[in-house]
Length: 218
Image 1 (spheres, rainbow, N blue to C red):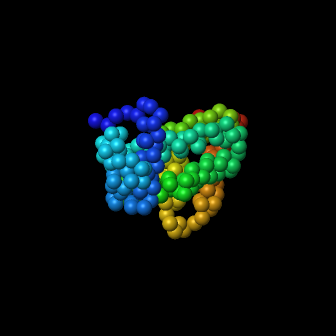
Image 2 (cartoon, rainbow, N blue to C red):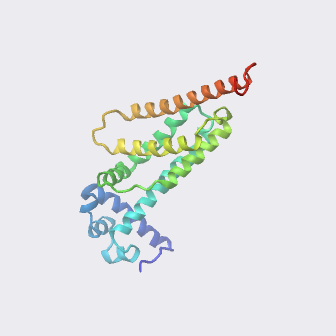
Image 3 (tube, helix red, strand yellow):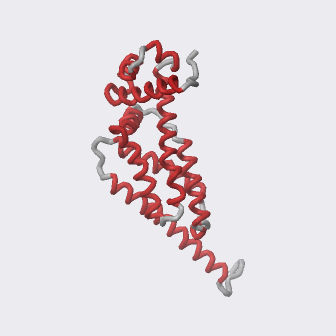
């Protein structure tokens, strides 16, 4: 049974194995990568690798967990700034933060995401979606003018999950039909347009409710 790293040296070995996993995926792909490839890049023996991971799939699971952890680590500190921005600035701030992470370390995470998408594997970003949902709630607390939107829960779920999928899919495409700046601008305007529409509907409903002569059954 693989052992849990507790001392710093063991933790460093695990991190080196995960780093090597991303590099190997960039070179050999998901299917072509082997534990031997990963061990060679990490500078450890295959036997040492198996002390911490049962198989290649276990390494991939840990790589996903680290990707999600680092993505959360990028987005969470942005919250205090985002909640004080207009939507047209808040959304690009989030999206460019994601882009920066994906391009970091010679595009290590971008190559990883590209391999996952090309293999039609599920990229579990539930923790990231929950964080973005929390950011939305914090945004509404600081911007109560947006708080009366109808279908808030449903639309937040759609925007968060569809937005994350679209961003990673776009960056995983070696020849995307639009630039990343165009994608960011489009997503920001889509959300802003929806919010404005909801505000207009809310004002209209309030005006009708308070209009003289408006009675039930009229």
